[in-house]
Length: 162
Image (cartoon, rainbow, N blue to C red; front, top):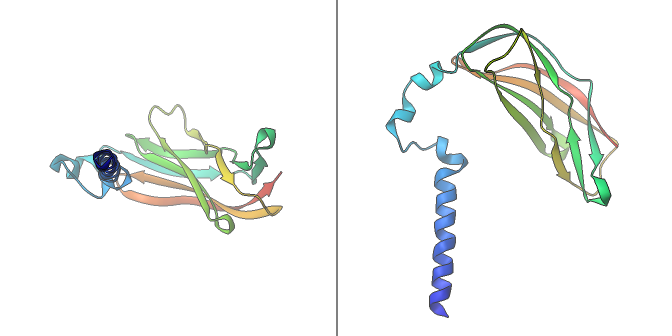
């Protein structure tokens, strides 16, 4: 009986250590020296944004079939480029401070046809029993390219519940 417990604990510790070592903190630690070279940022390319068209509202709607959670949906933002080279990243985010939530979707700007791009935000679930009729949210578009990370546009929107 004692050996079984030791084996179970050892497996759990091994899984936890692996998850921490190779999970979201892996960017803070480098196991390979080549990961710290300067070429990584240069390969990202660059992007210059001319304008961003945000939606007027976002919605929180109840899930189907009486489930206890809700879905947060945000229409796409239209991003108009001035110039685009390489493969920079674009992050479309929604932050609702009153609910303590922030969600975002990363877009790799590779093989973009034309000068506009529809940045979408993946729907997210919200497990909450009581919701107000409306919240204030902040939509933002962040660019990550060879020159670093910068917010290129943001807007306050009404987030309505259905």
